Amino acid sequence: SFPAFAQEYFKLFNENGYRPDQWGDVGLEYRNLVGLPGGVSSPYAKQLIQVSQENGDKLDFAKGKGDDPDRRALCFVMDSTEYPFFVAEQYHQFHDGFNWGENYENAYNNLASKLAKAELLGESKCPNGLVGVGVAGL
Image 1 (cartoon, rainbow, N blue to C red):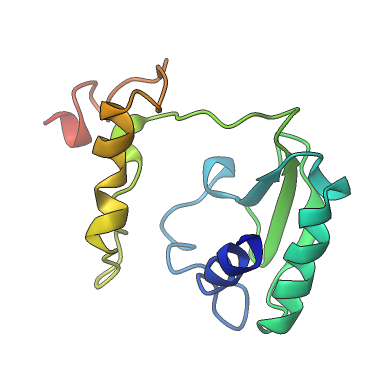
Image 2 (image 1 turned 30 degrees about the vertical axis):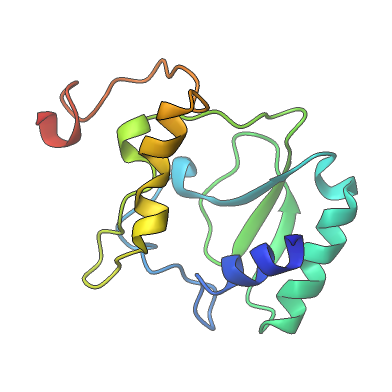
């Protein structure tokens, strides 16, 4: 359910609205956002705010405009019909975090290969890695 998703999302933030990666991963490509059909007008937006309040009210929300900054404790609600999802650097999806102990379940890590085999990731126009061949060019 969407409320269950939102509850998991809010677990990513500490009591001050920081993500664990807030100090290393910065820039608009790392901003906090949730894409919803209709954006802030979506009935899911109200659910998002309600679940946020029920889970410590750690974040503020704003309408996403596409070039929004990466800000602590601020989540942009994007209209996914205006700004549809696409996979950018495919190698950079579904991996563990970079902080010590930021390891995710294998079910999450295996999503990339499952989605690729099902041809659900689409084609990315982004280079495959830092040097063009994968992580660190490997």
